[in-house]
Length: 323
Image (cartoon, rainbow, N blue to C red; front, top):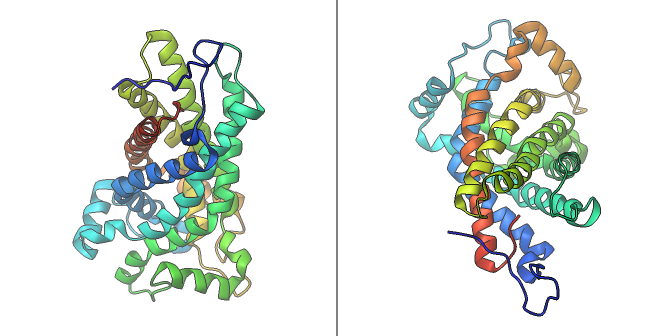
């Protein structure tokens, strides 16, 4: 299907866009959340597998680290040892996160692109402006959504803790929220927020910037219309770049968030994201920062594809302009 822009016959300049309710802030926000929720549910098992892989072999936590099993064996192990439905363990806070994160990152990027940094007269958006917009929108969105990410990571690890004979930390999203606040205060909800924000900045630099830039370049070089094929090609590029840039920060974020804390909410293993980065490299080597890269990449590609195609399709159905 070819996507067309909404044009009013009253416009003096041919091709001038007319923005209706579908292009409004809140409509864009809701569409972003819906598209992200669809993508999250479909690809969530890969996110869970990725998180387990990033924790396995964590030398700093034990003198006898668990064996690194790999993506496929980890996924099969979860199904055999915990049940198939456990592949979606933690999906509830993940969806809560997207209610905040995905909506903010998209509307922030569009606001910076269309109202602050502005496109060139020919409609192009310079990559340096796109990079600034992608990084800033990721930072803002992830900082606000960090508590949901923290809860998601802790719930994802509960199945593994039970199998290892360790006591249960949290039993549900509400329980995790209350436990964190009671032990560390409201500030405890932002444990690991620094590496989380760093990861989001890199991921959005890869995702938003790459998607927007790839879409412009492909349209300009090939003459393709704003269509499913264009969205597919652009999202594939975005997924690969986002996974490559974001995986190291994602490993650090996962480990910082998963570590136990004292009564003041201070981490017992890592002092912060930099300390985690240094200990991981010292104990496990540089490539430990890319543990879980394959499921991150495999997940990021279909996630990005599902999100962008759903996002563009819903906007088109509502009469909005393309991203």
